[in-house]
Image (cartoon, rainbow, N blue to C red):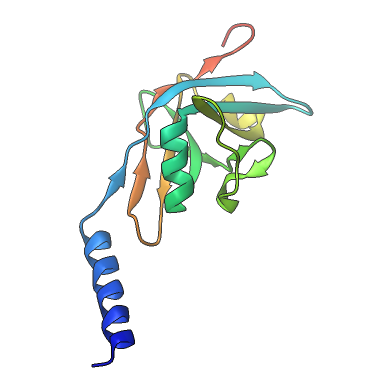
Length: 145
């Protein structure tokens, strides 16, 4: 077998092993806040350590900010994440300092449907398994919730 075919075979087998192993990245959400946005929207901020953000970026893990009720996880609303105004899914977002804030916007009426809102980061990668931060309470940054 040629060297190229052996290399391709090893890469495919390696990718299959990683995928089958069910590798799950579990980033720790340091903080999760929501603020009123423009035009009847809510802006959700999720803060991760720079290390967890680097893992997402390096492994190219596609994910959503997911809003759930803390007591009942049946209703789920995914929100597309941005970092510094750039789509997180482009994986070219900046990582400076000790933390990175992922941000998403959703209609206020959707958020109002959650009596006790929580947020999680959930998604996955083609090669590196799943991402699941687990739910964390979402706190109103200004005013009461």
